[in-house]
Length: 340
Length: 174
Ligand SMILES: Cc1cc2nc3c(=O)[nH]c(=O)nc-3n(C[C@H](O)[C@H](O)[C@H](O)COP(=O)(O)OP(=O)(O)OC[C@H]3O[C@@H](n4cnc5c(N)ncnc54)[C@H](O)[C@@H]3O)c2cc1C
Ligand code: SF4
Ligand code: FES
Ligand code: FES
Image (cartoon, rainbow over all chains, first blue to last red; front, side, top):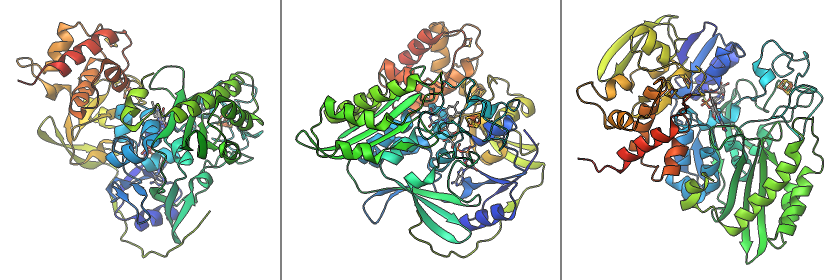
């Protein structure tokens, strides 16, 4: 780890001002991703501004009847919050499927959005990587790429966004509240992260000095028919190879409203509105689910070691939609179901 | 993408600490002041500055749980936080959970169940399990396994670790 100075933020706008004045500044929240990367010398900030002093830890109702998650609420406090468990159990499940109890106690909701890829070459300073060192090349294309992306890739980068929480937030149509030099704005969750294109060094669409203050969940009910299905190399404490957030609103056996987002397959949480439209108005049958799954993966591209993910993702989508339709992952059972 | 913009006034600037600063931590009930550089992790502060070597360094990257301690009652990985970030916090390490004369029930259960081999992961396992008990989320064996998954045991003593925790979980408090 390089040496740096440390300060504590006194106010949101002061923190923003500090960061815009000096690009060596980084905010630190839970520290679980930033310190890890600093120990590897991948991040080398000259000054850390500790934002844990900011009053952004609460979870409150919004005037519109939704729920506002403070950027500094921990992943654990969010997943176990009674309102989240009751109204947004898909989010609880996704969070509890990620990391470990210790890490979830440290990780913040804001920080989770900014976590960087787990691409092994990104972590290995000895190998070229366009995300770490723009223009140096991508070692994963043509290299070992079992954990890499199959959708929305580019010739510059095939990394995935590793978050579980963000997949649920994409499916739930969350909005991110952001403060920058020019004041506050809101960003639709789908517009928060970006595809690599020819600038994989940028994971998201925020300006470098913007700070996330909260994440808003809309007043929509997906608390009955939902599933977060995470497939990985061991049962727990591992990143997703493929994950699926599925949520339905049913009228009898007819799908009224559908949400479908995937993790582990792209540079951002992969929400597919076209596939959602294929589900709407249709009977909740395996046939319908298969059609949606095929649509999601129709443009998928494998890079060798990760080609298995295409079929895996299709099957995961069908299984998650089935679980959602059957309502087998109810709020009270959410935790039980994370132990398959 | 942007749907609303409001202008906010600027607040006061942040307070700067000198490169080496004083940090006050309450460790196992005793207040301790440390002169340390900001890049010192809580784990290194415990082991290198306070000689509390019960807390172990396994991976130093949040992947093994050997460094688990309780901060304000919550279990965290001390390798992924800075000591300066814990100013004023109440920290419990394995040294503070029990004494040789009066073992913590988990320490006794780990002995009774032979829940370790080399013992390197054990302080982290026990601190983690202590928090699991107070969290009150784990009720079944499967839930204990899931909520202990942040603690890796290289010797593979998992079966006995789970049995030890389960025994304490199911023992009514005296
Ligand atoms: C071993 C291990 C396993 C893991 N497994 C999983 C998993 O299975 N699933 C999963 O989803 N995650 C997993 N994680 C990742 C973990 O969820 C993230 O590291 C965590 O959510 C990051 O949050 P933080 O508060 O610690 O962020 P920090 O490390 O403090 O910050 C990360 C970045 O975000 C920036 N930042 C933080 N807050 C803000 C803000 N409010 N506004 C602007 N910028 C901000 C920081 O400047 C920094 O660049 C794992 C991590 C580890 C170490
Ligand atoms: S996939 Fe992206 S992060 Fe990984 S080596 Fe290629 S450019 Fe770097
Ligand atoms: S040493 Fe902290 S988790 Fe391994
Ligand atoms: S007892 Fe050896 S690592 Fe767990």
